[in-house]
Image (tube, rainbow over all chains, first blue to last red; front, side, top):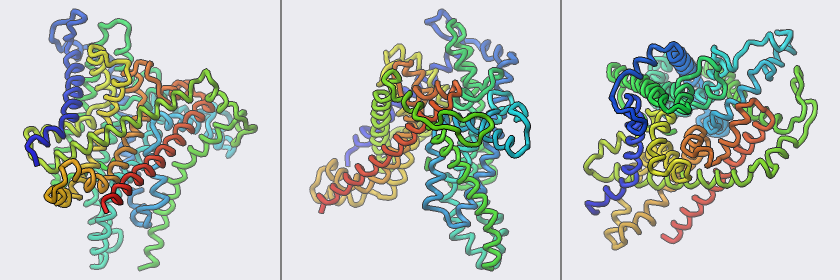
Length: 290
Length: 272
């Protein structure tokens, strides 16, 4: 109606976008050691090189990668089974779906509390094991929280992400099953065959997108590793925040370099996803419903 | 055929029940812990109940009620702004061609690939310079940035499915552009507005790190109040806060649903 209209409409997003990019670029510039306010005026890669040589950092990187890769793969597999279960038992709406949504609404901080009351050595599962005679004392129950194996964190992510994967891919799998899946069954394909050859492959765009979202999210997330992680090694975002809060401001570039590497890893993950997608020719993009 | 169907569905059904149980059980335990006074090892059930945890979180010194109210108002503000900016951006992207459209599209997804911690530490220094650190406005801005991708996505889908035909007709018949948007399109957008407000509200209400860093401990929300107890591993106080978190969120969702349904209904009646 008016040539100016779109520019008026995008004003707020441009303003917020500028702020977003400004914050991001500002952090990255600091990671190269350029902070005039602290008399640091040279662009250098030293901070990156130094943290890459630091075993504490490498351990943090490993823990973060381990948590995000294991939890995301398991969540993708279990989430796909859950989607399948919802579609094939006819629970694509109603109460069951509300329960699934409930898990998406609960914040990670409260999930940490669930982990504590269920998985600690005097938690409910340990008590159940004791009463069933599997263990004879609290100490016999394996340490899952505040320890390097990070199982408490991984299980916490699973609790949130399995429902997320299902919710995210439900609409696509349901519509494919209703159309092409049932058509192939009518043409004589067995149910199993039509699922593995038609419905599942065609649902992959949503499932793989969900995988990318939870993979990059859990790699850069703070809450669960902060609340349930080991003292050493800490997950990367927790370690970066620690460096950031160091009273000696000269530690700031180290924090920012860690952030730079977190970004580099998450963007590499995203890049690989799009490369694989392009190569496999998975067509069509899925809008994020969540 | 039908015999085989039922058989192949049984494992899937069991899996579904197992997941539903896994989701619901911790919530039941949350309620139990809130009202527990003693739950010694190795009992599977509390030995005595009390209101101690609730009394403690509702005690005047804990500051729960004022924090809860301001926390809800903060997240409602974020939700409303997010729906407004989301609707505006979606409209621009769906109906218009303009300079830098591709860039705006990219921008709307950017927060999804930049972890909140990375962004927060980067913007913190900028906010200190702009005197936005430790302020409500600063916290609202960072929350808004992280809720917008959802709102824009939801509003974009809906805007393009509704189209502009009806609105243009009203315009041709003499209504002002703003009026034809408010009376024709907005009621149709109501479900999307509700969905994006829900999503933005829960995202904002759940934020711990962004609020803590940008709010500098001065802006207190239910999350920043609750997390120290979870960090200490205090199950009864932590559970009491978590229960209040869940119940207040569900209440807000019901209220938002009612309000938006009523508003869009009234609009439609005026139309007729």
